[in-house]
Amino acid sequence: MGTMAVLAQPARADSVDIATDLECGVETYYSELECGSLHAGIWSSESIRRFATLLKFDVAGNLPVGAEVTSATLHLNREVDFRSYDEPSDELSVYAMETPFTVFDTWFTLGGDDWNNPGTSDTPEDTVVPADGPLEWDVTALVSDWATSTLPNYGLAVADDESKYIGEQRSQFSSSENETVALRPYLEVEYTE
Image (cartoon, rainbow, N blue to C red; front, side):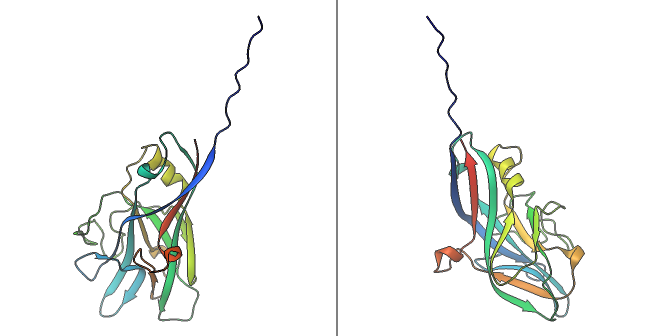
């Protein structure tokens, strides 16, 4: 009798677009989150106002058990650019949330102050120079850590990179309430299983 070789099945590649479970805007000036109102940037009137968009995605509930994330991209649509100058746009970064957030939190209850992001890591996952329309951030490493439970999934924050601040600017993004589905925030995840 000869031996029979067993061939390993190639990994099957697939992708999924994950909608937000919770999305809120938070700023230093007001004392509550504004769910459904998504902004990021910095503005000053009588005092400095910083804005961030907080997003939660159910990664584990949308991937098969044992899936290996090969790519993850955060998609936001920038609707409006409020600027007080004619220079190029400030950079916007995406950060991992290091603390859970709810609709009852504020910038300050999440641990932020006038110059530090609320409840986030210090190092951005990715940074882009925004333009009007679709924006993308690479969040592959973070989403992979969420999928393997290496890190807890507390969500993402999109905020200005204050170290590269060049002037007043605030971006407004489409929310999940937008009538056009393609403009709503989502996380595109490619994986193998």
